[in-house]
Image 1 (tube, rainbow, N blue to C red):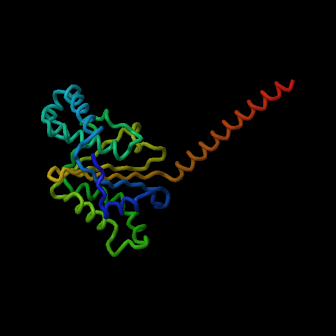
Image 2 (cartoon, rainbow, N blue to C red):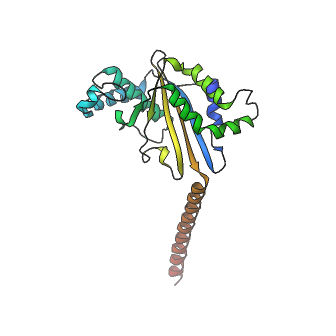
Length: 233
C-alpha cells in the first residue's frame, strides 16, 4: 500500500487533528492509499492470504462481508482493508483480523448520514477557521472524498472495533466510526475515521498518570536515600 498525497484530503486531515468541540475532543484520519503492493506489504499479503484460506469457516468461504473467501478477489479486498489499518496506525497490528471484523455498507446515503450527524459540531469550528473558504465543512469533505475516490464507483466497508486492540477503545471514548471507500477500478482505498474522547475522562487519566509517576519517583528517592543512610552507618 502506498500513501497518496492529495491536497484537499490532506487539508481536511490536518483540520481533523484534535478539534475542541466543548466537552470532548474529536480526532480524525482521512488518507488515501494505492492498492499496489510492494516490499513488506507484498510479503504480508501472501501470508495473510494463506492464513485466510486456512482459518476461514465453510460459511465464510461461501459468504462474508467482503464476498466469498473462496474467491481470490474477496480475499484480496480483506487484505487491503487490513493493510490500510496497519499503515494508518503503525503502533498496532491488525494482521489477525477476520472478515467478520468488517461490514459492507449497503448504501452511501446511510454512510453520509452517519458521518454528517457525528461531525455536525465540527462544522461550526470549520466556519471560524481562517482560509476555510465559502463551502461548509461537510460540503468540502464530501467534495474532497469524491474527487479522490469517485464515490459512485466505490464500495464502502466499515471496521467493527473490538475496543481493546486498536486506538478506538481509549479511555473516555465517546464514539467512533471507520469507513473504507474502495474503488477497484482506481485500485485505491480512501480511509476515513473519526473518534471523540471525553475531556473529563482524559483529564482524569492524565491526573492519575501524574500521581502514579510522582509516587514512583518518591519511592525511588526513598529507596536511594535509605540506602545512603545505611551506608553512612
